[in-house]
Every structure is written in C-alpha cells, then in structure tokens.
Image 1 (tube, rainbow, N blue to C red):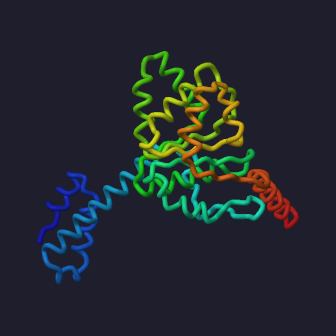
Image 2 (cartoon, helix red, strand yellow):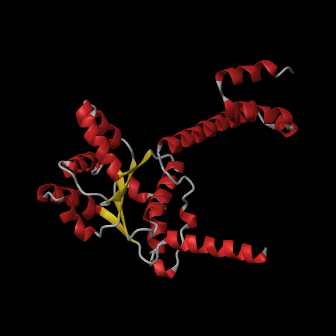
Amino acid sequence: MNHTPIVNKLTELGYKGFKEAYMHQIEDVNYDSMSFNERLYQLLDAQDISLANKRIIMNHRLSKIKDKQAALDAIDYNARRKINKTQILSLSTLGFINAKQNVIITGKTGTGKSYVAQALANRAVFDSYRVYYVRTPSLLEEIRLSRIDGTYTNLLKKYSRFQLLILDDFGVSPMLHDDATNLFEIIEDRTEINSTIITSQLPVSEWYNYLNNNTIADAILDRIVHSSHRVELSGPSMRKMKSSIQNSVSLEKIEEE
C-alpha cells in the first residue's frame, strides 16, 4: 500500500500527532492484529495528546513566568527555612485553584518566595490552567498607562480571565496615588472567580498601613487575606547560600589546579 498520499495530507493538515502515530503503525507489524476502530482510536488519541502538549507549551510561553524551571520537587526543606512541607504538598495538588482560593507567600529577601510561587505556577500550567506572572510594581505601572491610553477596561478583562495570577514583589515600592484603588479593581474582578498568589517581603500585619487608604485596605484584606493559604518563609537568603556554595566550588577548583 502506498502511504505517501495519507502522510502528505496529514502534513498538509498539520496533524502532527496523528501523523507520527500513523507512521509508527506502518512500521510496526504488531498493529496488523488490531481492528480498524482500535487503530483509528489510537491515532485520534495521539493527535489529542499532541494538541494538548502544544497548548501547554504555548500557555507556558504566554504565562510570562520568569523561572520556567522552578519545580515543587526541587524545593529545599532545610530546617532553617521552616517550610511546612505538608502545606506545600497540599498546595501542589492545586485544589486551591479549583476552590477559587488564594495563596500569600511572605518572607525576607532571598528566602525563596518567588521560587515557590513560580513552582506552583509551572505546575498549574502543566495541568492546563491559564496562568500569568507579573511583578506588582509592573502591574501598577501598566494600569496607570492603560488609564491614559484608554485601554483600562480591556486590561481588567485580561487579568480577570487567568485562572491563576501571580502578583510577585507586593510591597517593594511605595504606593502612588490611586495605586491601591487600581490594585483593588484587579483583585475584585478575580474574587471567588479565580485564584491569586501574592508574594511579599512585608508581613501581612503591615499591609494595611502600606496600602495607605483605609477604605481600600479594608476591602483588599477582606477579599484576599481572610480566604488565603498563608506560607511564611524564613531562614538565610537562598541567593547568599547559593553564592557561597558556588564560591566554595570555585576555590576548590583553583586549589586543585
């Protein structure tokens, strides 16, 4: 049988998964014992898997996650960090997304807040959730510009549709005029609809004063804090620890030479 016309048509249609499975069936004589329906189902299933993987790759790229290698399995549970492993494992099931709940990750600079947030985000992407990562100062600047150029409404729609939004570095820069209100609009559109992960150097107890707007602060804390899983990181800076390890390795190499 001449398979070339079928292969060419599959190539033309862009049915990559179907085509690869079909080529495999052609080359493996064991498939001769399978019925037409069995072989067809396998081909369709291969195409479905291929499309799903393609969507994951695309969504991962569009998520803007900075550390696409961040993984929950690679989290360091050193006792000094006081990370609740049971809590992280629970969050890794992503049940909080289905429950429309939020996560707040706090800790000093370098304790790994962003890493944990992005590890959860990567897991969510590979579980086919729509995810987006943004630093809070960048988001607030984007909102200010959108109010000027008339795209504010579209921007709110953009951020409301992500099933998981990571707001990194909350509290690292002063709140400017209307920043608290703008942040509230983003949070309000997501409340009880989608989930948000917020990382911050500021303890939650300091958020009220940081927002510098009593009415808005009450509204934000009510929507975020009281319905969130709280992850508190401590211990030494992971960046300093990694730097020390790298320096030690470099010295060892020099001594060996």
